[in-house]
Length: 173
Image (cartoon, rainbow, N blue to C red; front, side):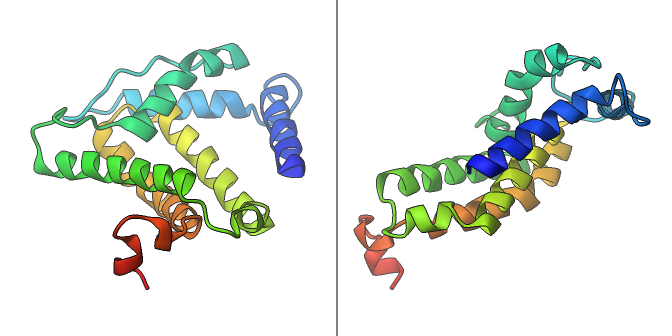
C-alpha cells in the first residue's frame, strides 16, 4: 500500500504539473471532457460544478464527484424502475462493504496486500473519480461505473468470512 500510495501521489502531482510544463495539459483535457458532457442533453441531468485547471477546483468538486459515483441514484430519486434497481445495487455494495468490515476473513491482510488487488482497487477508484468529475448524467454514471463496481464487489466478497455471517454459512458452503 505504501508504494502504491506514493506512486499514486506522484502521479497526481505530475497530472497537475502537466498544466504548466508538459506537452499535454491533462487537467484541461479532463475539464474539456466535462464541458463536452455539459453540452449534451439528457433526462437524468444532475448538478455538477465546472472543473478548472488547478488542483483547487478538483478538491472543491471532490465531494460532488464522490457523491455522484458512490451514492447516486438515491432511493426514489427517479421514477424509472431502472434507477430504482440501480439504487438497490448501490446499497447492496455498501452492505457487502459493511460485511467485509464486520466479518473480515482470516486472510484479509494477505488479500489487501496483494499487488494485483491493490492495483485493481486504485484503478477502480481512479476511474470512479474520473466518472464523478466529468459526467453530469445519472444514467451515464450508472452505466459507466458498473465495470469498476464489479471489480470492487469481487474484492470485497473475497474479504468476507462468510461462515460467520448470519445465514451466510448456510448459503455459501
